[in-house]
Each structure stands twice: as structure tokens, then as C-alpha cells.
Length: 93
Image 1: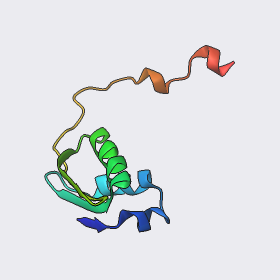
Image 2: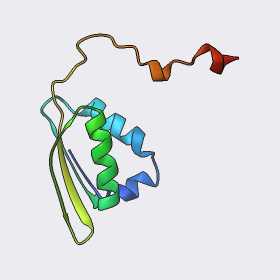
Image 3: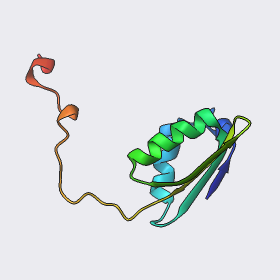
């Protein structure tokens, strides 16, 4: 899967929505390649790492960049409670 000039797509959709859809569609061991300016490439790299995808390569030249990402077989091993996502009693009052 390749997206060229992600900036044009971002004008119509949020980056988070597009990355979530890419993660949903991409099969394990599938590769995702994006070509765009380095600012967008940096944002995409952070999101992909947070989704546990493997950043295989990033390359930049003259302000333009390319990132290649591969989806891993990663799955959570146990249910974890994310305490930062749970409101405390003080916050609810």
C-alpha cells in the first residue's frame, strides 16, 4: 500500500483516522509506504510506532521524505488497565 503526498489527503481527513484505517486494512507482514514532507513523515512515524508497527526505513532529501512501515504480528498478551484513561473520583466531582 502506498500513499503519495499524504498532505493532500490530510486536508480532507484527520491523520489519526487515516492511520487507524491503514492499521485496520494492512495485514500482518504487509508494508505501508508514504512519501511526503518531513513534518508529515515524522508525525506518521510516531503514530506507527505507537501502533506497534515496525518502521523499516525513513529517508529524506531536500525536505521530502519516504517512510516504509511493516505491520507486525504483535498482540497484547494480557489485559492491562490504563490508569491514565480512568477518571479519578476527584475529577468526577
